[in-house]
Image 1 (cartoon, helix red, strand yellow):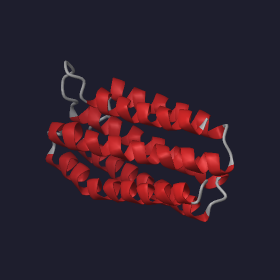
Image 2 (cartoon, rainbow, N blue to C red):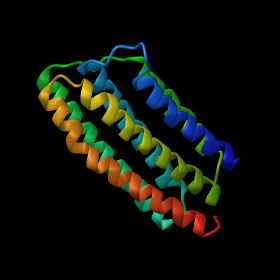
Image 3 (cartoon, rainbow, N blue to C red):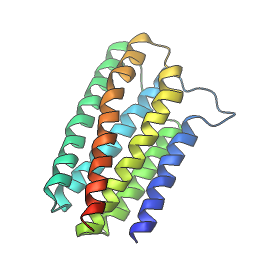
Length: 179
């Protein structure tokens, strides 16, 4: 089951990457980028809240709480900015795919407990943050036309990378403990 979840997380991450730069798809506009950013952050908030409530690992709990805090903060900044700019987030296939992938991930995680849950959650967080960084670098930042939106994306990129490094460290610890 854990191998299945790891593959599902990688498939979800790949879908984020593919959906955000399909070859014949036009670059997302600022309203679509806003929807992608809000959805991507909310997906991680939801997973973090589930992990915070289910895990018995102090390290996983601390990581999950950090994901909830940080991604809630980014969403607040994004919503404040789009409100200021009078941009209404526009639903799009990437945002819809993110939401579906997030819902699928939560459904799978809810079936797990203990070490299997921790490993599946952290494995997904690694794959998810890799995909988000890829989307930021290759699609979202280059496609943002509004300077303030682009600046926000650039500003949050180091935090996303720090989350990835933290998740990779936690993944290594979980693997080393034999969990």
